[in-house]
Image (cartoon, rainbow over the protein chains, first blue to last red):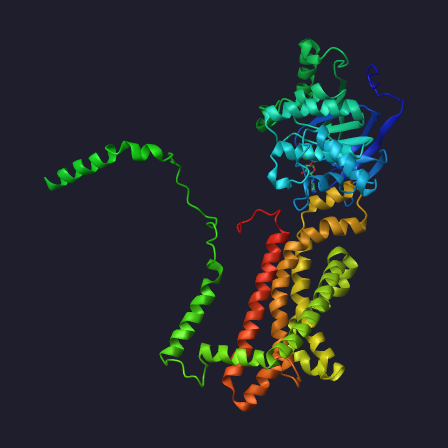
Amino acid sequence: MAAHAGGLSTTAAAVVVRDLVRSYGTGAGVLDGLDLEIAAGEFVAILGRSGSGKSTLLRALAGLDHDVRGSGRVEVPRNVSVVFQDSRLLPWARVLDNVVLGHEAPPARAREAGRAALAEVGLAGRERAWPNELSGGEQQRVSLARSLARSPELLLADEPFGALDALTRLRMHDLLRDLLRRHHPSVLMVTHDVDEAIVLADRVVVLDAGRIALERRTPARDGSRPTADPGPHRTLRAELLEALGPDTDPARKDTL
Amino acid sequence: MGCAVTAVVQAGRVTAPGRATAHQAVDVRPRVRRLGLRKPVPLAAGSGVVLLLAVWTAGSATGLIDPRVLSAPWTVVTTGVDLAVDGRLVENLAVSLGRAAQGLAWGVLAGVTLALLSGLSRLGEALLDGPIQVKRAVPNLALLPLLILWFGIGEEMKVVTIALGVFIPIYIHTHNGLRSIDKRYVELAETLRLDRRRFVTRVVLPGALPGFLLGLRFAVTGSLLALVVVEQVNGTAGIGYMMELARTYGQTEVIVVGLVVYGVLGYTADQAVRLLQRRALTWRRTLED
Ligand SMILES: Nc1ncnc2c1ncn2[C@@H]1O[C@H](COP(=O)(O)OP(=O)(O)OP(=O)(O)O)[C@@H](O)[C@H]1O
Ligand SMILES: [Mg+2]
C-alpha cells in the first residue's frame, strides 16, 4: 500500500515532521530544519553517521525529549510504541507483566493479548520467567511482544537488533517482517546496517547535518524478494554507502 | 637413589589403578581467581552467636566472670523461666512488642510517604528534604524532653519517639533507592503512557524496594533502640520497666534477662527482614546469591 513510486506520498501520512530543530546545550542544532513524512503502514529506515542525530529524531517523535531545546512541528498517531536498543524490561516484573505493562485494556483482556503476543514471538510458556533468565535475543523478542500487544499505529525502533549476533539478527528480521504483515503499523527504525535497512524498509533515509540528505525507495518487496534479484539491491547499497560518506569511522566499517 | 625409587613408585601409583580414575568424570577447568562469595554454608549463620554463648558459659563456669557483674547463662535461663512462668515476662514483652510495632508501623508509613513526596516532585523535595535532614542531625534522645512536654509521659510519647527514630532510615534509603532508579525505566514508563499511579506502583516502588528493605533493617533495630530509651522513662510496663525495677533491687540476672530478650528480639527481627529481602528480591542477581 505504501509502494508509491518515488517522492513523498501525500495520502494518509501517519507521521508529519516539519522544520524540526533540536539542539543540546548551546551547541549548534543537532537537527536543523528536518522534514519527514511517513505514510500509514510504511516502513522507513534511518541511516546516518554516529552522532548525526538519529536517536535525537526518534526521541523527538517518541516525545521523550522534554528538556531539549528546539522548535518545529511533530505529528504522530495517538498509539505509539518504542523498541529500544536494550530490551528495557523491568527486571522486577515477570515476562508477562512486562508485556502487559501499561496496556489499556482491562487486566484479563490485556493478559490475553500479552499471551498471544508472546506466542507470536515464539515465547509461549515463558510468561512467568524473570527477564534476567532470558537470553539477549529472547529479551528483545519480549520487548517486541510488548510493543505489538498494544497494536501501535507507529512503531519507533532505535537500533533494536544492534546488540544481537548476526544469526539472531536474521531470525529477528524474519520475525519482524512476519509481525508487521499482520499488524501493519508505520515503522521508523534507526539502524547502522545498510543491508538491514534495505531488506526491511520500504524507504531508506540518510540523515546528515541535521537534515535528510538522501532518501530512496527500496526495490519492490511484494512478490519478488530483493535477495532474489541482487542487482538493484547492490546499486542502492552503493549509493547509500556513498551518502554515508567515505570518512565513515572505521569502527563501523565491518557492519557496513 | 632413594628419590628415584619413590618417583618410580609414585609413577606406578598414578598409572596402575587406571580403572579408579576412569570412573571419575574429568573436571579440568581454567583457574580463575574467585572474587564473588562461595556458596553459603548451611547453618553457618548462627555460628557467631553460638561462639559468643560458649565464651560466656566458659567464663562463668571457670569463675572468670563474677556473677555480680554478669550473671551466668544458666542463672539467666532459670530466671527467664521463672519470669515466664509467673507471667511477668510475657506481659512485659507483649507491651514492649506492641509499642515497637506501633512505632515501626507509623514510622514506616511516614518514611515511605515522605520519600515518595520528596523523591517524585521537585516541590516536595524543596519543602521536605531540608527539614528531614535537620531532624536527622538531631539525636532522638535530645528530642525526648520536648516530646515529653508535648505528649506527656504516656504511651503516645513512646510511640511517637519510636516512630521518629524509624522514619529517618526508611526515608533516607527509600528516597535514595527511588532516586537511583535507572532513567531508562522512567523513559519506558513514559512511552508506555503509564499514569502516575501505575508509574509509582509498577516502577518506582519495586525499583526502590531494595533501598526500602535496607532502610527497614535499620528501622527495625532502631525501633528497639528507641524502645529501650522510652521504656526507662516512667514506665509502668514493658521490658525496660522490668529492667529498671530490677536495677533498684539489684537483680543483675533480671537485667540480663531483659538484655537477652532485647537481643533476641533485635536479631529475630533482623533475620525476618533479611528473609523478606530474599523473598521480595528474587529477581536480582547479585553478589549475595
Ligand atoms: N543528552 C545529550 N546531551 C548533550 N548532547 C547530546 C545528548 N544526546 C546526544 N547529544 C549529542 O547530539 C548529537 C546527536 O546524538 P544522537 O544520539 O542523536 O546521535 P545518533 O545519530 O543516534 O548516533 P549513534 O549512531 O552513535 O547512536 C551527538 O553529537 C551527541 O553528542
Ligand atoms: Mg543513537
